[in-house]
Length: 151
Image (cartoon, rainbow, N blue to C red; front, side, top):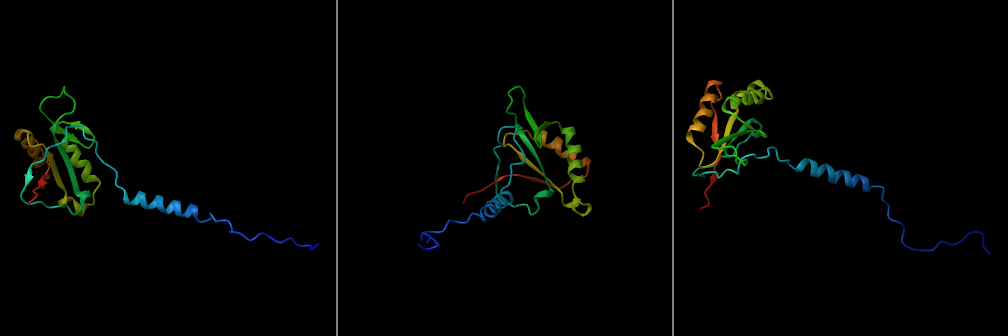
């Protein structure tokens, strides 16, 4: 009898040492590549008007979005303004713009744009009131969201 036993020849076990590295790489990839929805709409999804010329924003961090439309809540009559995740009044726009300006660097403030996402059936008076408030705080760059034409 021999002192050493012969081992069976078969497949070696699979090494799982690199498995946590792979999992964390995938996790990191999806965290970086996924964008989270920033605003939950409290108005009915705006039916945007058709546009002739569409231009995309280069720096989305310089855009402050104002939603205008009918409220999901049936007790609110007329047009409703939404800033971030809450329903607001025209007078709240001043603090909304000032808060967004605080987050920016001094040289970026002149390039800051206010984007209106207004429903086609929104009243012009509501938009005019907002524009008047923006004019008073010297936020003069305004853009309107629209749907591009399919030719």
